[in-house]
Length: 148
Image (cartoon, rainbow, N blue to C red; front, side, top):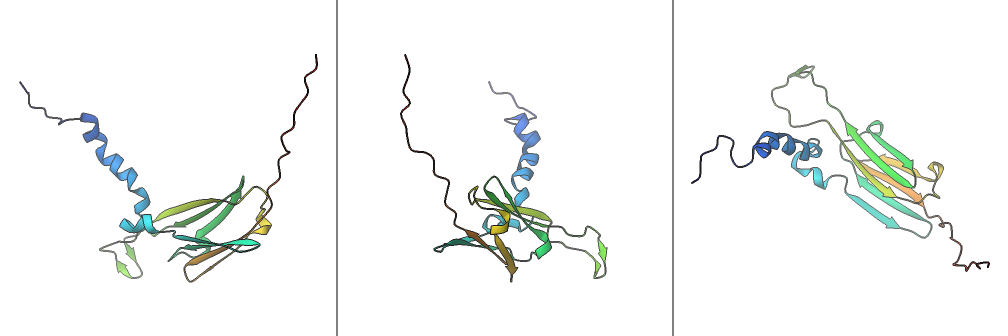
C-alpha cells in the first residue's frame, strides 16, 4: 500500500532543485536565453597565420582580456552593471540586462609568445592574428642496446 509523502519523490532534488537550476543557468545571465550563441567564432587559415574573429557585441576594449598560458589563448569578456536602482536616468523599474562573464580558450601552441599575437576590437568583433609556428620535432624512434 502506498503512503502519501510530504516531501515528494526525492527530498534532495526538491531541496536543491532551485540551486541546481540557478547554477546551470548562470552563464545565461549576461544574454538571457541567447548565451549559448554568444562568442561565436570564425577561424580562418592563411599561409603564415590564423585569423580568429569573435563576436562580442556591446563589449568595450577594457572589458575584454586575452591571456596566453601553456599554449592556450583564453579570451574573457566581463560586463558589470550598476546596481543602483536610482540613476541619472531615473528610477529603474525593469532591468533585462545583466552582469556576467564569457570565456573561451583556444590551443595555439607552446611556441607562440605574447609578442606574436595581435588583436583589435572594432564594431563588436574581436580580431586576433596568431602566427603559425613549427612544432618542435621529437627525435625519431631509436633502439637502445642492452648490455649483458
